Amino acid sequence: MSERKIELSIIVISYNTKTITQNCLDSIVKSLKKSQMHYEIIMVDNASTDGSQDQISKFKSQNHNLNLKTLFNKKNVGFAKANNQAAKVAEGEYILFLNSDVLVLEDAIEKLLTFYKQRENTINFLGGKLLNKNLTSQPSCGPFYSLSVIFAALFLRGDYWSLTRYSPAITREVDWISGACILTKNHYFSELGGFDENIFMYMDEIDLLYRAKKRGFRVFFYPEARFIHLGSASSQGRTYPILQVYRGFIFFYKKHYSQQKLYILKIMLQLKALVGIFLGRVLNNYYLTNTYEEAFKIAQMA
Image 1 (cartoon, helix red, strand yellow):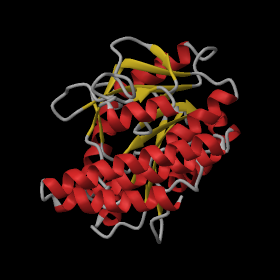
Image 2: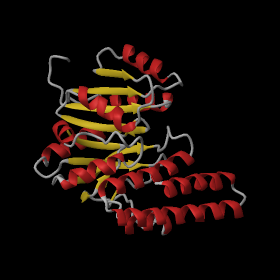
Image 3: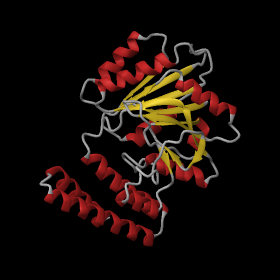
């Protein structure tokens, strides 16, 4: 296999998701079992403590014919840096970033790549359709987070009304696609300098694709390639994702928007946090109160 040119590099990052990561790897291999495509899988583990590294090594030893590269970090360097690490050793012309909590359905990977290759003059970044565990659609693309979009996300149930995130039934151009499944050309990713490593987790794909759009690159959503995305598998509950989203919004606005818009963002985030604190106290919900007290501090101190 090593004598043939690698067409696709599939990058998966794991952190304390031993069983989920194993299921992801199994689904990749199963999806491509009948494919003639020459591919490699690059696994990066961010210093897991649940036996993930041993499990990945065991999987590698049991699949001698599989082109699997493993990178074991000594500390959790975050999603962005780990993906950049993998991209630097990727030999494929194309790169597919897949979350470890993704299960590939049928021949979704080959469908995604085939569609991309047929429209290379139009598409620079491509995402597939993400599904929940029960196979219902999972919102996984949307518009960039302008102040109006963030307002809808915070106060108007934006996802419910498809104002902030959605899952189209047809192929269409979008501003961003979920980082759980992104296909692009290796040299496009390199040209953009990869993910911003100052973003530890969340908003990294938004930042990448925002920079891509500014360079004239086009992003598309392709619903015929389907993947199950379990979601937040390594996020240790709901508090951590909420706090990281707060940090992500603030970082994104500091990097890309004016001081005036950053100020308005901080006011909205603080207001949302105060609502959360109020509801938490009324409902005697310790989780809600603590989460939004911490979120308020993040917005206030930014």
